[in-house]
Image (cartoon, rainbow, N blue to C red):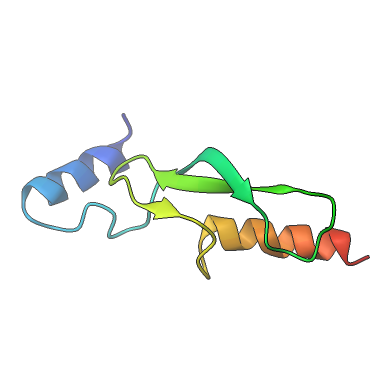
Amino acid sequence: MSLSHLVAEAAALAGGNLCAAGHDWKAEGSRSCYCTSTTGDGMPVFRCARCGEYDYGEPGGPGDEHCTRCNAVHSQ
């Protein structure tokens, strides 16, 4: 366990926000991609390893970054 994880855990125990400094996103499965691609690509679903929050492609999150790259590749 890294120092940042220990600090986040301590903050949570003290009533603070576990992921105040950012989430620890890990890919966990996939879903249909809503981009302009017609290749049937899947989009990863991310989950924070610390707090359990999911990212399904919300703006600014890792899923949104993936879709932006996917659109760039398929629009060429």
